[in-house]
Length: 111
Image 1 (cartoon, rainbow, N blue to C red):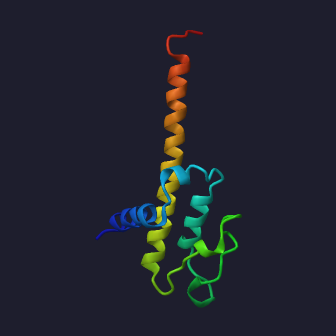
Image 2: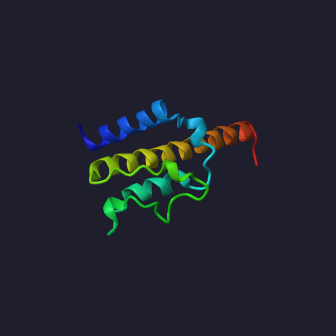
Image 3: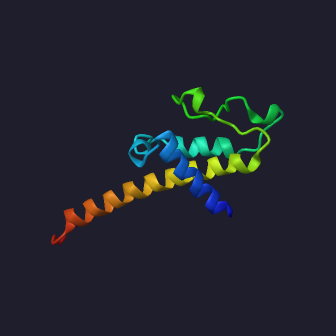
C-alpha cells in the first residue's frame, strides 16, 4: 500500500467511523483542519512520542480529538495527510461554489 493509499484509507475511516463528513468539515473555516494535520505531521519532540497536546492544536477543538500514535510515525503521517486532504477538499468546494456563482452572475452581462 502506498502513502497516498494510506492517506485515502484514513480519510475514509475519518468519514465513516468518526463522522467527519464534508458538511462537518465545511464548518471549519479558519484552517483548523490543516492545523490539526500539521500537528500530526510535526516530528515529536522530547516528550514520549509526542503524546502531549501540541500548542498548535486548533483553538476550540476538544483535547479528546488529539489521538497520537506513539512510536508509529507512518500512522501519524496518515492522519496528517487525511486532515490536509480534507482541508483541500473544503477549499475546492468553496472555489466551485464561487465559480458557479460568478458564472451565473456574469452570464450574458457585458461591461
